[in-house]
Image 1 (cartoon, rainbow, N blue to C red):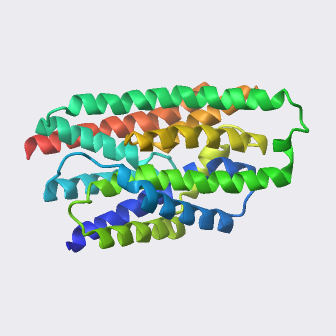
Image 2 (image 1 turned 90 degrees about the vertical axis):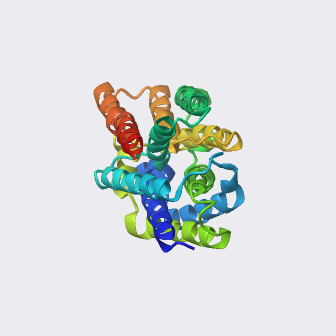
Image 3 (image 1 turned 45 degrees about the vertical axis):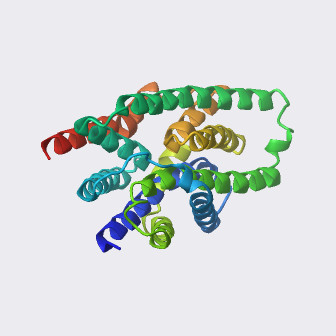
Length: 302
């Protein structure tokens, strides 16, 4: 077993988890329903179970050489570390897909264009669907009045606990399963599992990603109790669909678009289109294009 690959796995999982704590806890963090310690326990449990139970569904379908894997992981870790430091919630899925796309096109892997197109199409559909689902949920609840069940604080706390756990579970299955898929043929199974779990613990305890959580949770509008639920529901459904189809989906896309749909449904006018546009450009478009170009050039020259 190569220790370098194991180290790269643990570090990449840790950075991914720390960065995506904003995806798991963002809306709930904004409303302050749950304590940070409770959030961390739920996140660790959900991420671990999600990866162990369903992570194996996220296979790559092709074999990647040893040094190619090393380069892919170093690029991903470096890019996501910088984004996490600045508080941008960019799923490691986006980074790996950008790098992997550059790799596939540079190497001329047969059928790569079709596979890449399928992934990006699913992302676009997810963004639109999450906005619509969250909007309809909030408007539907609003029609029932302020005394609706979901406006009861005790009920909301229970629902939030379930949503945080399920979000972590699905992120563990989809995102962590996709990352580990690069090393499934290079690291023996027991070491692979231990490495992922160790990375989850380090990501939650050390990196945390609290700046990203605050940005997603309340950086665009003040989250209230009702508004914490809708983004989770759309994210859970759409990401789980992606897992069953073996399509990597950045949960940040689903939950962020869910936040936008929720705000629109609540008729909140505090969202700045410029702020949202800059966030999408800096957190999604630029990292994806940047990693693709860097990866394509590197692997084209090798």
